[in-house]
Image 1 (cartoon, helix red, strand yellow):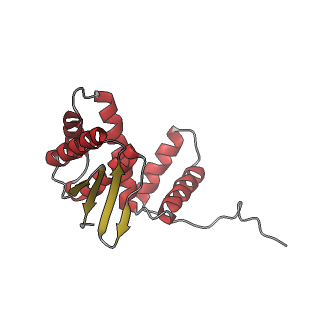
Image 2 (tube, helix red, strand yellow):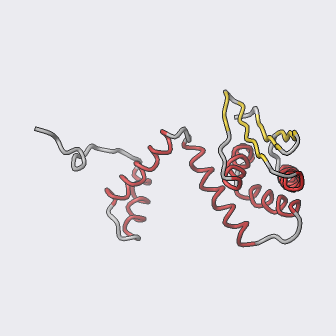
Image 3 (tube, one colour):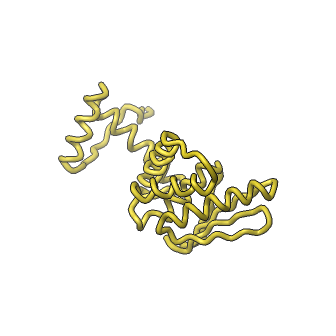
Length: 168
């Protein structure tokens, strides 16, 4: 006899204020608390299994919100101005202690690439086909870092730009 685990239930305990917020939100979108809780927990578990910490989950949300705001204001002009605009928005939305990871995640999303992590050192590389694109991106990243208090290193080797941090 096999057990159908999809209909099995197990208790989940949370603070009462969190439950009330969850219940109110679920009701506002016409969903049951049980269904919403399972969706949130399943999604979070998938992200945890991919190596994304709970803090990084929140930062990713803030980064996506930041990129949305950047698209809304549509900065005109040079890559330098675009970097400054993005840096200004990130400064206002992300705590200083999270700026390094927020900038790395933002650039990963923009470049549709994934950085690498070795111990406490995180790095991401951007490769370009021509020097002009590499110059523009380097200008963008440099102005972004100048506008924030992030502590990241930018290294340029030919048409490759490497951004790294030894901070968590």
